[in-house]
Image (spheres, rainbow, N blue to C red):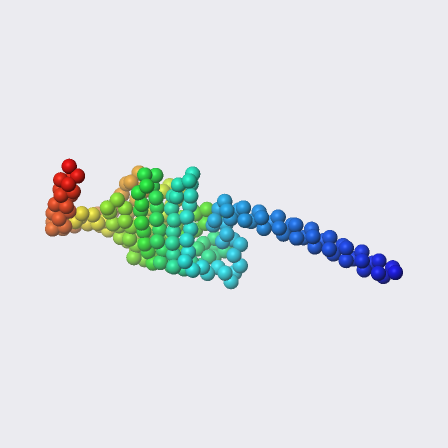
Amino acid sequence: MRKHRRLILLLAIFLSLGGVGYKVAQTIWIQKLREIKNNPLKALDYLPEAALKMKDFHRAKIEDGRKVWEIFGDEANYLKEQKEAIIKKPRFYYYDKKGETAATTAEVARIFLNENELEKMQLQGAIQLSYQGYILKSEEAIYFPATQRITLPTKTTIITNGIELHGSSMEVELEDKKFRLVRDVKTKLEPDKMEKNKLKNNRNQTVGG
């Protein structure tokens, strides 16, 4: 009888501990879901090592109901220790407060995270940025979300309406809509394209008037 009582007591204890463990695990899981809902980048921390390679990568930032930026990629590898994601064939879109879009493509993007917030993004290889009728081309660009600034530290070309500007480096202020070429600035004019654009603009003004 004593053995049976001890066995029943042990079973009761194990069942009780199992119930407590389940409630604790459930609470932790609910907390994790809340963290991911508030900050989608947090989900990267809970991925197992074998699942750190992702297809069809997509992340976005929403602020006060407005989409600030989003990035797509064919494939991404997340390095948990370095808090860094490497994205192949990225397409990055920045949306200003007036609804205009700056679209950027490259070969590779490296996203650096700080407390699961985007600290900076480094784009490399065949970079092309389109914004307000301008096309920027370079081999490297760094985006700083905190200041809404893009730095292009290597040779950069700006193309617009038959005019090409070249510089050793460049800075773009997205909110202020300012472009600044730095050092060795050169200008190339293409009169044929300039004339075509001028005629096109005149036709549009005539139709609009």
